[in-house]
Length: 66
Image 1 (cartoon, rainbow, N blue to C red):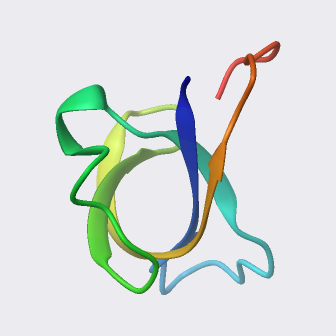
Image 2: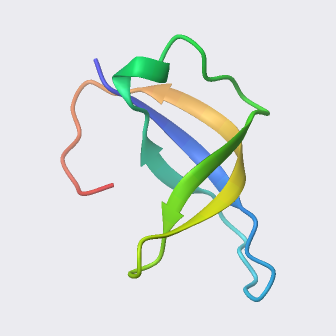
């Protein structure tokens, strides 16, 4: 089953008041934990930013693009 991570991104020029949901790659599913610092793609330009994992969820299925 797919795992998603809720990530608060560190974007200094923007006020982000909610976590963004990312699909966790299968190769890191066993290692990822709440509180870890991660690097994620952000925005339309596929810029990579750092963030913190604030939640993990196992999904039955994923029906929208994340």
